[in-house]
Image 1 (cartoon, one colour):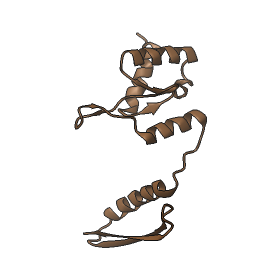
Image 2: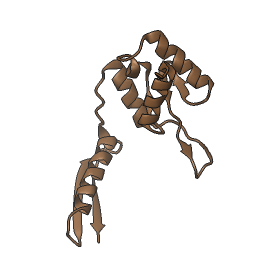
Image 3: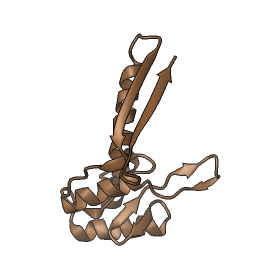
Image 4: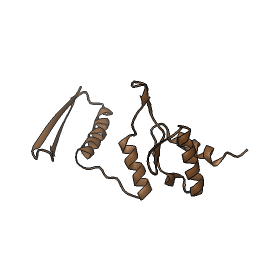
Length: 138
């Protein structure tokens, strides 16, 4: 027996995992607009998904620590809006620096060295001075 449109959309949402943020445009290739709209409305009324704002939904993430559903991840929201409007998201400033640091940190953690000293120089926009960070990994 074939699955209903609502079940197929729900399967895709479950495939995205908890915390996945999406728009109706993510399903428009395979389904008609009215089918998507009705299915998302039904799933929202059944509390299986959450409507963040008009045209933006997420599969809520439950926190064991807080014992409640947490707010949507802003990076997921930004990516969903970028998909909807065909934008390109490019982090700048301190966000870009944080991403760069994570990338370098993971790269150096995988190396076989016992001690690594990394020095970063960057211009902090908020204060306009040069900052230095020393990171020692033992």
